[in-house]
Each structure stands twice: as structure tokens, then as C-alpha cells.
Image 1 (tube, rainbow, N blue to C red):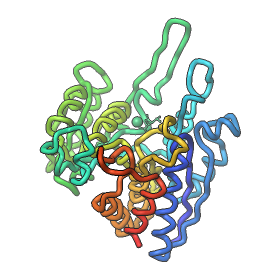
Image 2: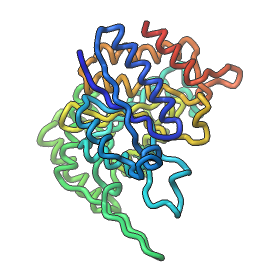
Image 3: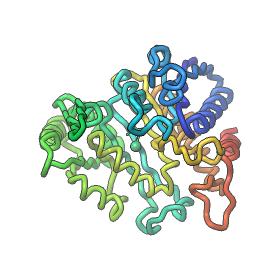
Length: 353
Ligand code: IPM
Ligand code: MN
């Protein structure tokens, strides 16, 4: 097949992990006879430096023309602090909004060989296979903000239709998995959460009566994720809770660097990014873990290009490389050596060939 893919390397380790995903996508195209064309554009701090805009118009235009968008990471100390008027993160939030990608899928799958890399006890980890469906274009991230000398506000808003559509995505996913859905809110305190709970209950009762539903308050969910992670199948939650819970959940897999994500809307065009940030402390050193980025490329193949077997192959290659002992520093054992980003990517590509 032919596909145009926009690459947005961004900031910090973004360019390094994007290069890894790019190499994997090129290898998949060569092996399977596809023609992927890549268009590299600016976003985030890199875009602010060159254009003073974290999401330049030509970046948006490229994304709108492409079949899928891959993003590395945005942000860094150079573009944060009191003196800064526009932040890199604004570019990413606007992009999610412009693309209409309201459903952020964050799979958390424990690979047995990495159990040692997690600070948690092994008996809790083997067999963990859950997916967090994070609402991505609403809530406190997108509400009106105010700030003066002594007062700041962030408004959290949710419409019924925004809750219905994300619950449908999560329930459909659960239907194809173990049929279990856990909805996370803070309905004992927040009005938006009370609406979230009502709409979730009604939508499930009306459209997905066969699904087993559990509701948790977000503080309890944070604890249950560590005390009984294997019980979870699909977790659905609002934007900020999903952001926080997935960084927590990543430690089940051994490292934040392992987790991929797919952001989807009503069209096939998705935005794919590892869930880690720009990690400025290790940027430019060729030591970042490329697995989350490469697994995001697999999600791109599956969800935007409809190439399910190619996606399976990429996920299999990551697993096999790890099973063969390949480790970047974040997942290395005390006695083992750790590979560079480039060398880790080489070993994953070897598994593809
Ligand atoms: C993420 C990131 C972003 C978010 C930042 C960079 C705006 O933390 O994708 O999880 O909060 O959504
Ligand atoms: Mn995050």
C-alpha cells in the first residue's frame, strides 16, 4: 500500500526515538512491498525556536494530508518557567484537538523477561494485560484558564457526547478482550465526574449490556493498579486522570520508556506517540529507550494503515529482542550491559528481517 506519514520529532529525546520508529517503518515497508512517504515537520520547542509558533500552519497542513502522524515528544526547560509566553505543550494539545483524536489508547502489557526491571513484586506482574482509554480532547486540559497576580483558575468541562463517545470506544475494545470495563472518576467531589458516571452507566446499560463494569474513584484506582493490576482489562477515564494513571501503570512494565499510545478519532487518521516525555536530562546521548516509540509505530500500522499482521510483527520483534537480552539503560539489570538507542533499534530490526 501507499501511505503518507507525517513525522514530528519534537524536543529532547523526541528526535532520537522518532528516528528509531522511522527506521522500523522503512524496514516494514521494504519487507512487505509498501511505499511509505515521510514528511518531517516542526512541533513544540523546536517549532517555537524557528517560527515562534509551537504548531506552525504547515505542520497542521501536512498532518491533515497524511494517513497517520507520529510524534516523538515535546517540552523542555528551555521553554518553561515564568518568562515564557508560549509553551511547546500547547502545540501538542492543539494538534490533538485539530485532528479530533479524542480517544487515547495506552496498552500496558508486561513482558515476563522485564519483570526484574520493575520495582514491584513479580507475583503481581506476570500476566498483566490492560489498556487505558484516556479521553484526550476535553476536561481540564482544554478548559478556560485565568491568571492574575494572586489567583489562577483552570476550568474542567465535559459534555455528555464527549463522555458517550469515549465510553463507546472503551466498551468496544473490552468486547474484543476480556469483557471488563473499569471507569475511573472522582464522583465524590467533582460534578464533571458525576456526569461521567451517569453517562457511562447509561451508555453501557443501553449499548453494551454484556460488559462487566466496575467504577473506581481515581485515588483508589491508583492504589488498585498496584495491588491487583492483573484484574484490569480496559480502564476508561478522563484526560488528566488518564495522564497520571498511565505514568504509574508504566512501572508495571519496567519503564515509562516501554509504553506506546494511539490517539484516534472518527477517521482512520491517528496520532501515535510514546507516552514518555522529552527527557531533557538524557537527550542527545543516544541512550533513550526506543521501545515505546517503536510500539507506537506498530499501533500506527494497525490502526491508521490497517496493516494488522505488520503491526503484530513489529510487536513480536520488540518482544523477541527483549527476550534475547537486549536492554537500554532504563530496563537493564545491575550486572547486565545496556545498549544505545541505535543498537537497541538495530536488534529489533534484526528480529524483523
Ligand atoms: C502525555 C504528556 C502530555 C500530556 C504533555 C506533554 C502535554 O504528558 O502525552 O502524556 O499531558 O498529555
Ligand atoms: Mn503524560
